[in-house]
Image (cartoon, rainbow, N blue to C red; front, side, top):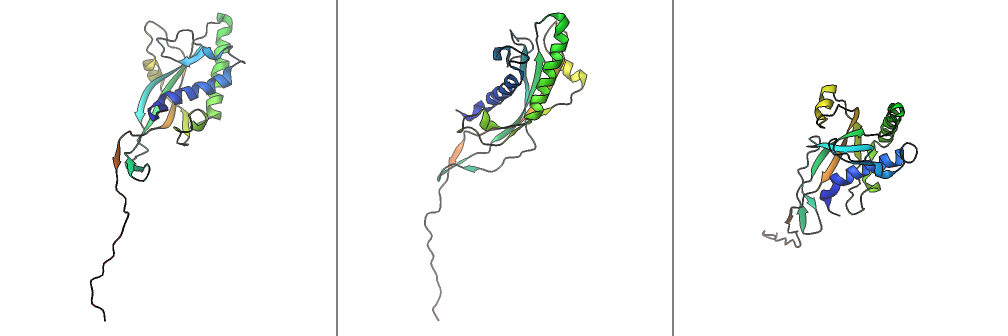
Length: 192
């Protein structure tokens, strides 16, 4: 698996957590939880939308990484991924609000309990660097939340906002290096 898929893999890791938390107690099928935008949520009951990707400025990677004896990889980029989690329940109106509140509570608990998402649990061993991805609830103002809600002609739905990171994308660029293989010591001095 290529390193560039870590953004998609992180989203799928969050989906796995939500499916484990919500199925079968609050939802019937794992197919009811998926990655989607508010405008195109289809039959999902729980939609997870990646609405922003930003470079994580708290990590400054400037050093080359050795790969093998004769090559080095250019520095990685580290990202913070921002997600909006929205419910699209189709249940009976008189039960829907209570069901939504239960699902929100379960999602919040699951993401808090797994605040350090272990890439080894959802990434193949060859692409996992082993560094945990932190999941944190975002403290956004109501105006920001409403602005992020982009479904036209639809009233804003209460949503949860989280960030996940750092997510490392390794550079594909490498350079060859020549290692020191031999040292020649020559002394130029008179013997006494």
